[in-house]
Amino acid sequence: MIKKENISLKLYNTFGIDVIAHQFIELEEITEIQSFINKEKDFFILGGGSNILLTKNIEKPILKIETKGKKVLKNSDNDFAYIQVEAGENWHEFVLWCIENGFGGVENLSLIPGNVGTAPMQNIGAYGVELKDVFHSLQALHIPTNQIESFSKTDCNFGYRESFFKNEGKNQYIILNVTFKLTKQNHHIKTDYGAIKDELSRKGIANPSIKDVSEAVISIRQSKLPDPKDIGNSGSFFKNPVVSIAHLQKLQSKYEVIPHYILSENEVKIPAGWLIEQCGFKGKRFGNTGVHEKQALVLINYGKATGIEVLDLAKLIQTQVKENFEIDLEMEVNII
Image (cartoon, rainbow, N blue to C red):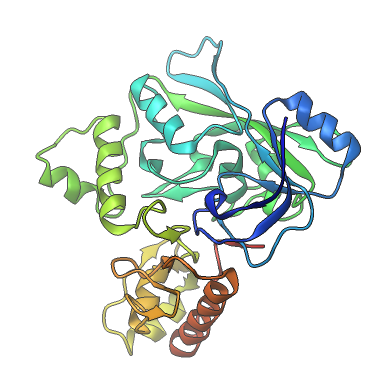
């Protein structure tokens, strides 16, 4: 256990927002987490800091879960590997480890910031793949009872950037480790979503490996998304909205070309970035904050923005999108 007092969280959130944590506690063992829970029930859990917007100083103790470890579980399945990963592991480093060891399924999720423990909460996803597609189970500590519980995929109630842990189980559990079901052979390569196929074609790759897909995704993300080390951001700030076919058709009478992805015979998903761009926000600066010039879905901190400034911009965008498209944009980032 490492305990610090009155420290800035600027280096612990990818937005680079400078707020103060009155108590900051790093825990590296599950037994340390349980021991802390025995004494304290009111605290804030900080993962990789990639999906939060801090708008104020944090009075309650902050727990930084730093448990580490990856373990291939024994099984007799020739096609799949079951890999248990501790919550404090960096997500992208885990993806690279999988590729290096020939485990497939997470390559489309390359370069997503954050830690493994927070990935199920958000049901992270990118380029046609979501965490739930490779999820097997997880263990989480129930805060009120300090007991470790196991969760299946059904228990987690995954949805689009949603899970049990963001809704009914919010603030009730600490995810300790996650077990993934990944392919060992006959990998299911997915290249149809977004620009992956074009990137592979540009590189002259006709029969991509999982490593090829990962490298293509990394190239695409680096070309579109700013590195938080260079400029503060949390990646996609808003969820891509899901609307009815009828609403899409209504919009198409005014906007001839609207990018969309068909989800069912009744619903489609519209890129939030496109909606924001049509409202004129792309590349526009508002004092210390603004909208990224290459990807309108990304709000950025030019260096001295407060969380409130970023939040005010997000609300302005929501208002404009609602007025122009009659669509409610939902924030993907957690506001603290």
